[in-house]
Length: 226
Image 1 (tube, rainbow, N blue to C red):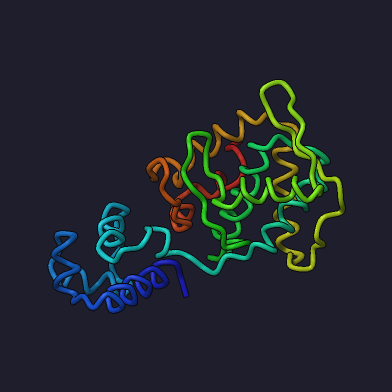
Image 2 (cartoon, helix red, strand yellow):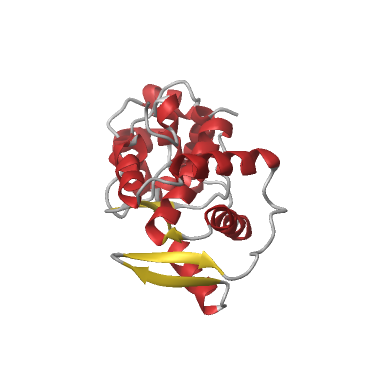
């Protein structure tokens, strides 16, 4: 199922779940019922603003149109896999590497690696569980957090939780992302995410739809343009 049909299916299911007619939904976004019906059939693109209106009408977050089940255990393995490769990394940079891994995976497979939700923040996208997970891992003694200049540096103190939930292809994608950004400053990766369609098209504090990465330049999905 491609991304357009996946979103169309979610829209139809959420409308029906809320006992709304196509006429009511189409009126909310200022379309004729016929044009709206094409959206639910996957034959007409829907704008981000139209999705925002429907999300409010259905009582959900806009990201719910794109979501797969979140897998915290897998996200934690991604977290430690990056730490293993880098030994230590600024906290903000780690958050952005995880974002690039999930959104790149979605670009290539129409599924994110972990299914996590990412929020649009001033310093770029961040998984909604990132800070809580980081605090939990620190409290459990599995990572260290050390202030350095204006950054907090995270390093593993254990071997993590294994890698069995990551496929070979996913490890390869993580390796490629780490290799691109290993020697680049945190400011560079923050600026890079600010230049991408997902962050630029989402309001501060909103969840970022994975679908937006599909509109990105193929050479700008996880690395700067040459």
